[in-house]
Length: 94
Image (cartoon, rainbow, N blue to C red; front, side):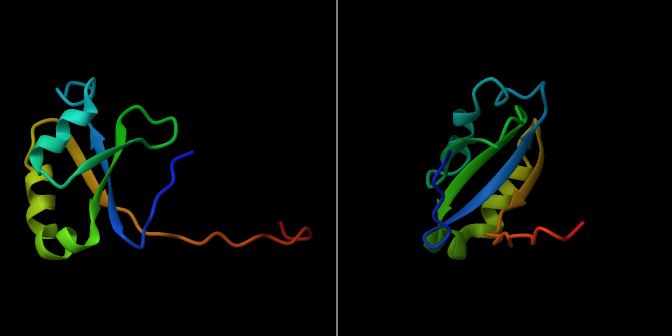
């Protein structure tokens, strides 16, 4: 399981087209911006990859980074991830 630190990083889930040059080599997408790091695939989804970037860089350049990624051929979608705390369900809920 991947250890993600939302206190220091912002994470981007990038959906790649199967025809994309990045589909078989997702780490090559970090060339779009020098501060991006490839974290790995999201769950068992082969077409969705997770990338991290420091919060400091994200605050300065987030909009530009999103525009760069969305403009790349073979990138279908970019979603900024947020930390969601899961609540434990009681045994009597349906």
